[in-house]
Structure formats: C-alpha cells, structure tokens
Length: 326
Image 1 (cartoon, rainbow, N blue to C red):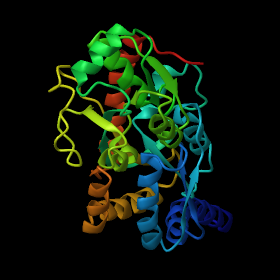
Image 2: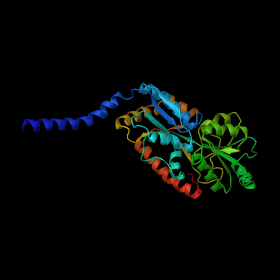
Image 3: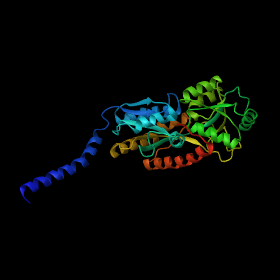
Image 4: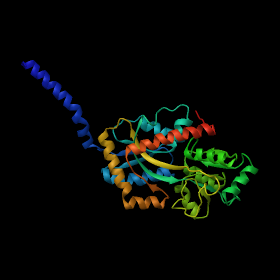
C-alpha cells in the first residue's frame, strides 16, 4: 500500500467513525437548555394537569426546566402537527392522547402522520371518562337520562373538548348504543367546557374524571356513570355504563409522551428511562390517584402497539358514527 492509498484509507476510516461517535457525544450533552412539552389543549384539562405533574419531576431528573406550552385547536391536531414538524433534537415533546388516534380517521386532511412522524416514548396514565350532568338536569340515572333524551331528540346538549376527540366519539357511541340523538357542542378544551357545563349552557359531558372530580365532590355536577369497563377508584360508587344498561361500553382516555420521529435513539432512551422512573415513584402515583388517573409507564413498543390498535378500533367507530371533518 503506497502513501496515497494509506492516507485515503485512513481518511475513509475516520469519516466512517465520525457518524457513529457524534450521536453518542451529542446525547451526552443533551439537554443543554429547557425542554418544551407541548400540550394540545388549553390549561386546566387532564392533558395539561398530567403534563405539568410529569414536567415538574422531569425537570429535576434532566437538570433543565421542562416548559409546558399549550397549543390548543382542531381537536388536538395543531399541537401534534407542531411537534411532528419540529427539529428532532429532543427539545420539543408532545403530551399526546387517545384523541390523536381518532383524528387520523376523523380529519380528511392532516399535515402529519401520527404513526410515522412521531416517536412514542411511554404512556403516562389512563383516565376514565365520566358522564356528568348539570344538577338542573332532572335525570338521576343513565336510564332516566336516556328517557329524557328520547323525549327531546336533538335537544340535550353535550360538550366535548373538540370535534373528533375521544369525548366526541364517546358521545357518538352513547347515542348509538342508547338509541338517542344528542346535540354535540365542541370546545377547545376541558376548561371552557367545564365552565359552560357548570353554568348550565350545556346539559352534560363525557369528560375525563380529572377536571370534573372537584365539582362532583362539591355537588356542582352529578356523575351518572363512568365509560370504562371498571369503576373509577376516584368514584367507586358511580356505576359503569355497562352496569347502567349499555352492555359492552368500554372507552377511556390514555395520555403519553412522543417526540419527532428522527429524535436520536439515545435521547429517546434517556427520556423513557427517566419518565418510567418518575411514573413508578410513590410520590407521582399518589398525585395520579388524587386526580383519578391510573399511572401506566412502559416501553415505546408497547405505546406504539396501543396507538396501532386504537387507530384501527376508532377507524371502525368513526365510520359507523359517520364522523368526518376537514
């Protein structure tokens, strides 16, 4: 081998080695500045509460602030679109939810692919949804509410935290299984929804337990049933919709963290390890119990499977309910 050949070989070897060393070295320097956790709903809702609880502990773990940024709109798709198109450097994350698996089928034109453009990290928690009514509504049970709805088709208004979200689809499923017609009123999040529900502008909602739990305990809202197969630990005396006569009704809401798809593996692994450690901690679990949430955790593969399964499941429900948006 002559000198030129030796130099060329050495140069090629060095060039080949550089890409392998850069990600590891870069990951060791991460995070060097605050991390943004995007919440695709307004402040005050379950997604926001979970993001702030997780962000507070994650800030300690990472040694950098985790800044929760609310980007509501379009059934949680605006926030997801922002993260999907963000620089994949580990500094922009999404507090995603089951709503995003529904949006894939509901919205005809999305600017991103939820399964391809975002990398799942872990499911943080699952929260039951609960059918609540304003106390002015005379119904004390699900069957009484169904009777009232049948007597006033299209009159009883239920709110959701956005068109095409889980709450919207739960309402559509309730209409289908109960044989009733309700009036759907979409909001940009649980905060404004709860305000109108308390004020009597709408009669009912299928919100997650977290934002309505204090109002149920204070007697300002009446809980008729939870939407999951099991009763909520936060509302043990409230029956399930299955128990109330809508056999087989089982729909809840999960929340999890995702990053732009090309985020370095080392960063995703660090985030996953830190988040799972937080989720398993007694302090975080107590916080989840207080707000009616069940802490979950797990691997990216498990979350990806949840996303695939729910996307397929809700595609069928969306088709049956004839829900479609531009």
